[in-house]
Amino acid sequence: MKNLSILGLTILMFFFKSSLHADYKKIFYDFKINSISGDVINLNEFKGKPVLVVNTASYCGFTKQYNDMQELWEKYRERGLVVLGIPSNSFNQEKKNNNEVKEFCEVNFSINFPLTEITNVKGDNAHEIYKWAKENYGKSAVPKWNFYKILINKDGIIEDTYASLTKPTSNKITKKIESLLD
Image (tube, rainbow, N blue to C red; front, side, top):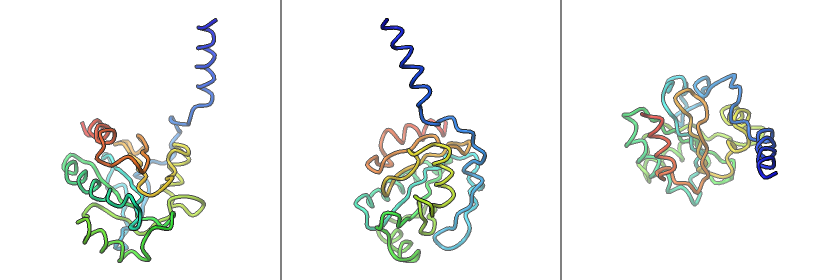
């Protein structure tokens, strides 16, 4: 009877599990997004590289994670990792314009990894990258707050997502990044 219950529970879990094996019609590298300077970032330029996508905000309590993002960029850039910061005012904690964000990041954190323009990351006005993430990975890919992380693997699909509380330099993230680089 116990084995039958376990089998039944396993089958039930199969039917209600999240869509982790999505039928990706597009991959991350198929998109474009504007840089903080106004140039177009063609994500195809990152093809074959893992990308850590982080929605950021200048007035958030997690803003010090910019230091960790820069550290990851410096440590793993030569091995192929791309760190992509996406400033967002979706949670009402970002500066008024791209120039202010760019200056804030450079002056306070010496950021030199790619940053995008201020971008919506949730809801109907979310950038197509975030709509794609939700469609293919489910609600766990929708940022719940600033400094939410989405790790894209070398194939251009979502490898994993990480909550705002998880620091970019945590063992959980760095071990996953290293597995994608090797």
